[in-house]
Image (cartoon, rainbow, N blue to C red):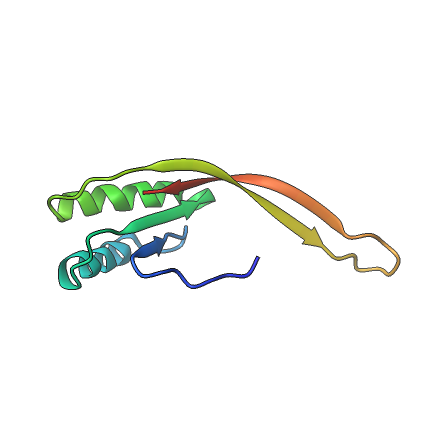
Length: 100
């Protein structure tokens, strides 16, 4: 699946990103640019960071509330063989997804 840039107002949280940087970006969108909605999305190892981010943002910016959607996403990995004549190996796995 090709990676697409996040639309305006959508924040895709990663496991290595800093919560403070995400909170600053949310404040910039909501306060400075006047957006009325911000979506925080995360999957896998970044779930806990997304929940922390939402809670910190709600404390720092008054008047926010959240709607949370929890689900799962299927990821399909395809591996090419190193030797000729062998078949590709395809594995499917499910990962948790949260949208706040």
